[in-house]
Length: 121
Image 1 (cartoon, rainbow, N blue to C red):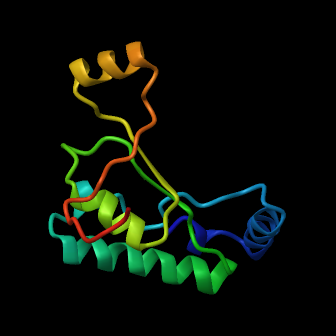
Image 2 (image 1 turned 90 degrees about the vertical axis):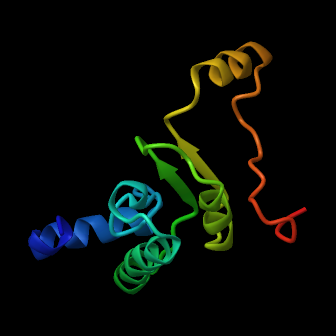
């Protein structure tokens, strides 16, 4: 919605920044779906809507997923993001005990396996 109300000059500047690799879109959904849409089909449609816009307007597809402040993390999310082609996913909420353990072990970066055994290695 922000982009739609900008002048053509601002839109051209944003397009130039994207082209130069100085502006990158993260996630790219219409909204952060965990707070706005509760069902996986809605999650997919939300991301598809945003990704279609970014591809048609800027010729790019996001490589990173994010959830800044959702109310818990579903194991469906990393699976859906992986199938969308994301290379990584960042999130903010983590159980304090898990966070303390990971900080002590220097293991904050980790591979979250999706719920389905047939996906991934």
